[in-house]
Each structure stands twice: as structure tokens, then as C-alpha cells.
Amino acid sequence: MIPDEELRRAAAVLRAGGLVAFPTETVYGLGANALDPNAVARIFAVKGRPSTNPLIVHAASVEMARELAAEWPGAAEALARRYWPGPLTIVLRKHASVPDNVTAGLDTVALRVPSHPVALALIRAAGVPLAAPSANRFTELSPTKAAHVSLGDAVEMVLDGGACEVGIESTVISLVGKPVLLRPGMISREELEALIGPVSLHANQAGAQPSPGLHPRHYSPRTQVVLLARGDSLPAGRGAVLGWTPKAETHFIVMPRAAAAYAAALYAKLHELDTMGFDWIGIEQPPAGPEWTGIMDRLRRASHL
Ligand code: TXA
Ligand code: MG
Image 1 (cartoon, rainbow, N blue to C red):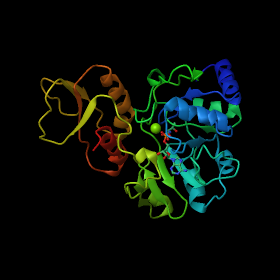
Image 2 (cartoon, helix red, strand yellow):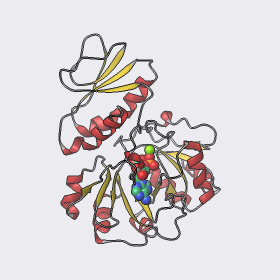
Image 3 (spheres, helix red, strand yellow):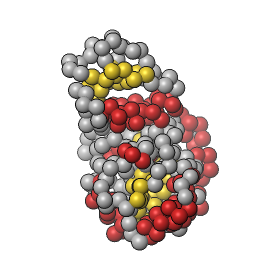
């Protein structure tokens, strides 16, 4: 945890309309008072994020989240009770109290109760829900450590809660109409279906993208990323490889075998390699299986496939 004094200062910054970067269990968020449209506008400015991309609103409890939704279907209750606090975001019809710029003008709002103790303590201390995208510039890699957050002076405080345990962004499900998976994550579609029945996959039609996490060129390091299938030859130039089977003459990072540990390590490894001046970063293709779907999604986007 962080000192109470620091938490109180951060809460005061948020109540005054300022920005605070804070840890969640998935990635670091860039937080503002979700009920203050001027504060929310600053998030878009600092990130260089298009105003058409809606934000996730973070609450400290199911009850607090529920007040931000105009409808609370049975599936929301079931998912919230099972997965909150945790890495699941639920899209619902929005309550009138949520400013339009939070939701990019949509009549729906994305809600999440994070499990990181610093995130929960910060929301409670501020006394308001926090709109918070990942604390990186638009299209860049999400931060999983406080040191990865580099958004300049407009961010008044960065709370250091250590390395994020989950390591990739939350699973996003829409419960507006039939359930639709908008962004895969470490809570799998299969787990969600076991609780609420069929969840369809979002059709990624060009020009109709309800979720900007589905834009290609999201979650990208600056260095070119190449997904490597077994037997692929390596690109020319000086590269680094993340995977399981060390290759001679490349800078090789051995990754954890288990999906959860792999996800927790992935962005930190990519941030680190991105500062090392390689011509390319190769990533060995992970195995199939529901626990790898969220990770594969991020790897595909990082490699712009
Ligand atoms: O793990 C996470 O979700 C992190 C931490 C900080 O909570 N946040 C995060 O925020 O990844 P961001 O802004 O990078 O991604 C938010 C995702 C986007 O894919 C966005 O399109 C979707 O949530 N989203 C937000 N509001 C939505 C809405 N009303 N309808 C559909 N999708 C929505
Ligand atoms: Mg993001």
C-alpha cells in the first residue's frame, strides 16, 4: 500500500479536477473524476485519444457501479457478484449522471470494480467514480509498472502500487441486448458463458467498431513485432525473441509456461525491449486454449496482423 498522506493528496487532486495515474490489477490507469466533464476532457487531451473512444468508469463496489447504470440485468448481477472486484468490464445502458464525454456520446457506459487495493482505496478516498483508460498515449503499450507511465506534467501524481498482477487489460463484455464479448482478456469467454449462457463474439467489421481496443495498431511497442510460428525463420537485423525455445544468436527472453504468469510479464518485457534499440521483437506463438485468447489478441495487435 501507499502512505495515507499520499492517498489523501491524490484524492484531493481528483476532486479538484486533476489527473492521477494509479495501479489496477490489470494495467495502470489514468484517472479523473468521472462525474466532472472538464476533468474527463483532460484525459483525452493528455493521451491524444480520439474523443470517439469511450472510457471505463471504475467504482469501489458493486453498489457504486450500479448507480451509474440505467438498467441492471440479471446477467450483470451474476457477473458482478462472481468477478468484481476483478478484471472484467461490463457495458450497460448509462445513467443520466454519467457525462457524455465519458461515453463518447454513446448511451452506454463501461463499468468495472478493480481489485488492486490502491485503486479501491483511491476511489473510496476521492468519493467519486474514476474514469480511467490505460495510462499510455493512444496506440502505445499499456503500463504495468509505475515507471512505464510517461505522460508528462499534466498528470499531477503517479501512485506506485508495484507491478500489475494480471498484466493485460480487462475483458470487456456488453450486456446491452444479447451478451457480446468486445475485448478478450484473462477472464475467458468460456468462463463467462458458464455463468450467463451464450456470449457472441464481436464482429470486427471495418467501419463499425464499438470498441477502440479492437482497432489494429493498438497496444504496440515502437519496435516492429513479429509473431513467430514454429519453424519460421527470423527476420534480418538485430532482434530479440520472447518465448520458450532459446535460439542461438538472438537476445532471448524465456517466458513463463502458464498463461497467467505470461500475461503478467508480457508488457514489462516489451517495454524493456522497446528501449534497447532492436530492429525487431519476435514473439513465439503461444499454444491454443481459452486461457491464451486474450494474450493472442494483444500479440496480434502488437504485430499489426
Ligand atoms: O483493464 C482495463 O480495462 C484498464 C484499466 C485501467 O482498468 N483500462 C483500459 O481502458 O484498458 P482503455 O480505455 O484502454 O480501454 C477501454 C475499452 C476500450 O476497448 C473501449 O472501447 C471499451 O473499453 N469501452 C468503453 N466504453 C464502452 C462503451 N460504452 N461501449 C463499448 N465499449 C466501451
Ligand atoms: Mg488502452
